[in-house]
Image (spheres, rainbow, N blue to C red):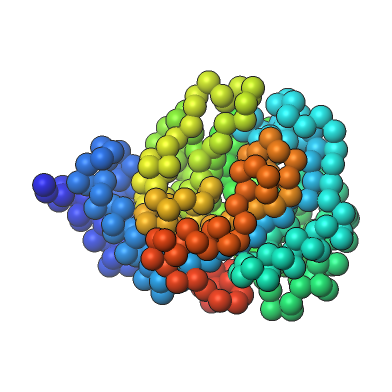
Length: 339
Ligand code: SF4
């Protein structure tokens, strides 16, 4: 079985330190699944990934603070008002969030994410953030995963002790969501100007998306100069308008994780996949999320009783994929490791 010389040349350019062009990324995405070329891409991404993070994987713990029928109505999200999964507001108390953060920290999470829905009040988010910052170890990295915001809010996030944010121009943004892609980019600019690092991901990908759009979102992510990218599949919310499309397999997602890993260049330390799975960890992912509280991919109020894995389960998966675990604060959310 031979690997196509064009595929070999494209991958060699990544090993030589180049950033792939739009056409090169597209060529990789078009490779026939289950082929020698596809296998070569996955193995190459795995090699680059392990080298970039010195063989050490990270687990970040996300605490979903609240549920609300969110008016932004992203079609793929369990919180979207139109999906009728959650019809009442519900939120964790500061005490609950504190306990969850301490537990995640104790279990070895390299960063703690606080996540609020797109309509979660910024003032309340800051109050909880201050409490958590005071409670957890000073060196533990805190990341905000919230809706769009401007320069003022970005500055406040930095002042309260956040190292970065998670944000993405998502698949179907402006089409499957009511949010203009430019609004997402403005948030990212505001965050960067305030000194916050940006984690991003090509998400949520479903069978309904074209490879053209996957390339577009990979490049948008690369232009953000993030501290990591990656790929995540769309999880079907029962009864949603996306249900008819089904979902991508973990096998297919692992290939997309590999292409994103190569497209981001050999220097970028981090590459994520979600939800955690061993195939992804052997195809270019070195970052998983453990989840508790609310989760936009779950119909359970507390995702630890549903789709969410805890920190220990994520670590176990990485160990099964022959990774060592980074001990202590995230190296991915570190200024020196961003591109
Ligand atoms: S993804 Fe965020 S903004 Fe969109 S509906 Fe869900 S909570 Fe609201």
